[in-house]
Image (cartoon, rainbow, N blue to C red; front, side, top):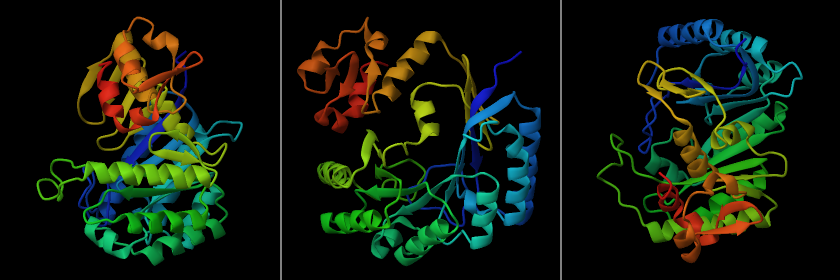
Length: 341
């Protein structure tokens, strides 16, 4: 009998508008497209491998743009696969101004217990630069709506290093986020991707991005958040279990356009490529992704690697039997990861 898969990602490919930095698979969807999409996911769930889900993450795109009726169908199809102990972490990504009280109540009844709100900034000028469809007031209003609906585990997604963004604007966004007191904050520096509106039109100030990142670490850790991964901060016990599963190299099933699955030594993209992995490839990935976690990786993963130059350069350090990035290493994490590929 096949071992049940414990981690599920569902990609919702619909957005009201394309943000200027976004390279994810997304487009405006008609109601007919959304109906067909949900039916497709339901068929895939029914025909797929056995599931006993510890984590479910519905991302996008903008999952919260789906109509309530489509959500009802989708949640009904997912519920039989939730862990029988009711311990599943069930996350939905949502954007401000695409959630109402009816939808939030439905999620609550269906066992959704974690929501990730794509705020990006609490500065209206910066939101306009990014091409977001909400304003700062709507972001705060949506956060309060979700709290009032009973959600006790909320994440805010933020971005920094934006075109024209100043340190004072970034500090103000962090202050506003901390005032809301979410259980989790994910904060990412702007990166430039091909086939986005920013590509070729925007340049990054990497030094300013690093100063903003240092400000982020200082303010959030001072406020009691656990900095557990390069871009992620959580109140104690509120770390995102789904993302930890990725970084720890666990098997997961991905459904929806462009979603990736990795089960055993097989990896494939929904409707696309397939790759045969090896144990060595999986070990390298565990090193590269595991070093993103501030707890680091066990020594056994790198026992046959010469890392003396990384230690000498102050990019990594030993903490007991675990290898971790240093403060300097956080800045050059991609360079460190590339050493193991």
